[in-house]
Image (cartoon, rainbow, N blue to C red; front, top):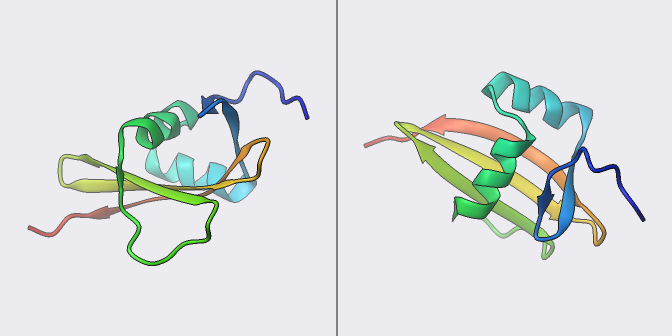
Length: 89
């Protein structure tokens, strides 16, 4: 399946958001390019077992951790969640 080139790619496949994850991106002040940066440069931050085809990556910005969860749908990545939380020191 061919997707429009408006979606940035991660591991050669486009990252496709849902309406809800677009709202989450807006709440966090992020865009899809930020999601790609977190997926490529972030660290694995899964706290519990995820489905086999799911990746969870985080990046720290000052005292805030930003988390991105994507699911491999074989010809694209489905953006499942974007959120942030404060790191406790």
